[in-house]
Length: 242
Image 1: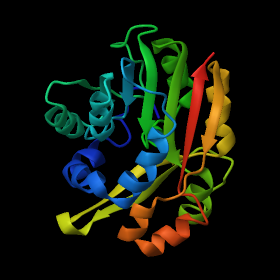
Image 2 (image 1 turned 135 degrees about the vertical axis):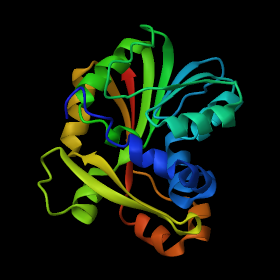
Image 3 (image 1 turned 45 degrees about the vertical axis):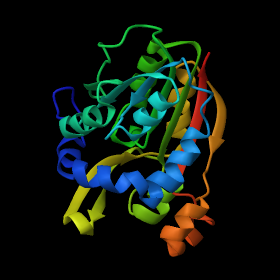
């Protein structure tokens, strides 16, 4: 990927933004698997300055603001930015930005916490991004993020490639009630390629979580609930700026 290439998932997320926003409110994978797992890694956020990196339609930003945080949200999709701005109603700053590029709109050491929910899979170079997040975090600041689990992404979804490589792949998002079916590109990478650039950027690993689905997930999709009790779909990381 070159600097002048369009962001990987901008066009596809513009297409599915409205359907995704409706689904993510109470959909099992977002509301009852990723969200409780990732939010459970956060410290108390009241009074903190928080960056929501890849904020999507603003569900995490809205929760953070309700808990007393000051929030800046970034997303590469103009439609997602518009949805988040509508949801937050001026209670947070929501900006269009590509996480694969320098975050020049953000000042050094200006955040206590960075959260990123299922967004980093669309960024090719984590070394560059983690150095940028080190720059914008204050010493001791926390980074918490979730991504697709490397084993699930390879062994179940894309077994035709090489596990040890960072590879461009696609997954199809389907929302039948909205008539939406979109092939969304992302990068799959091995666990080593997730943790090595994190540590090289000066972060200290606090916690690695392979989440289990909640009981609310079971009520919505018992078959997938049974699968997730045996095999994780996502992985969550909490790290501290050294």
